[in-house]
Picture 1 (tube, rainbow, N blue to C red):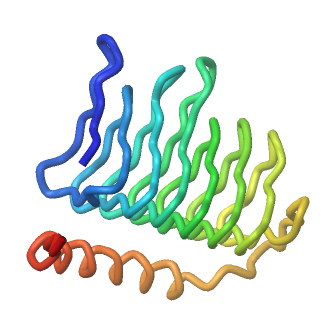
Picture 2: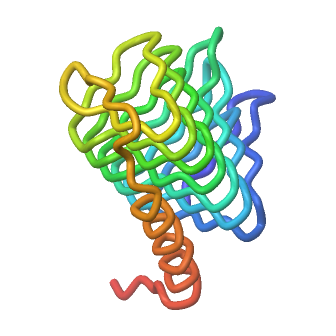
Length: 172
């Protein structure tokens, strides 16, 4: 798997995290325990810092980047769906970001919230706890997130990462 230091910026990855061989991790990136990064995902901590907490998944073809001023933070027990772009934002614990979503600078997504698939959350938006951000640009609907969807997604990817760690093998 391509994991790169960039000068003195060296990724820190928990021993029990799963990084797919086709994911790319560069620079100031921290990945927590039982977290997973899937094929085609790129976490590029060149200008600033990226932190992924424990038991979180960054799924296929997602891109996490940052700015010198604002880190990109993904909390514990988060699901970052396929083809998601996160840039200089804070995703608190227990959040699901749906496939194809874009979350931009200084956005804060609070716990037990969902960013719906294909939504674009514009700079400086605050998504309150338990809300759904939906649309392009996203509109926040308070009290509409279903906690069980987030918890089920987290557990599914923790289990899946264990299977891939044990059973994935290249055959070409």
